[in-house]
Image 1 (cartoon, helix red, strand yellow):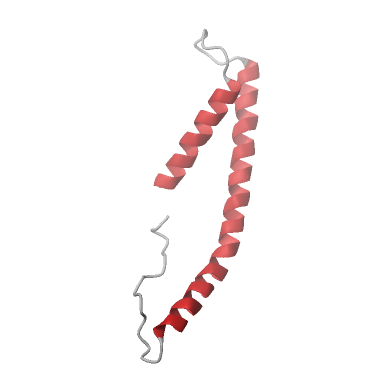
Image 2: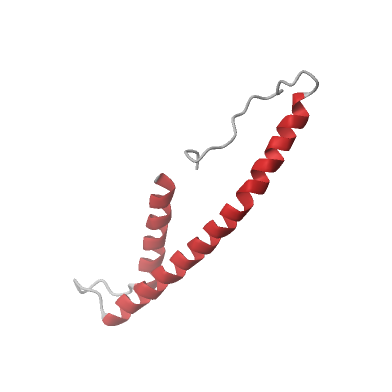
Amino acid sequence: LRDFLLVYNRMTELCFRHCVCNLNYRLLTGREESCLDSCAARLVRANHRLMGAYVGLVPALLQRRAAELGAAAGPSGLSASPDPAPGPAES
């Protein structure tokens, strides 16, 4: 949730700085609204592509980490460093 809120806040700040240039009016102009809509849509699409790539890479990363931990376990079968595998709560 924290990561989502950070991304949302960064996106809001970036689009606001890019699109809103006149603070003399209470409401947004039509040009500002359309700029904000397209800016937010671009960033959401980019975020979806990044998340898709991340989801595709996670299994390979976890497999490599498991292999490294297995190699570090040695003949006794105990791991030299008992770091837990990253879970969904860690992000």
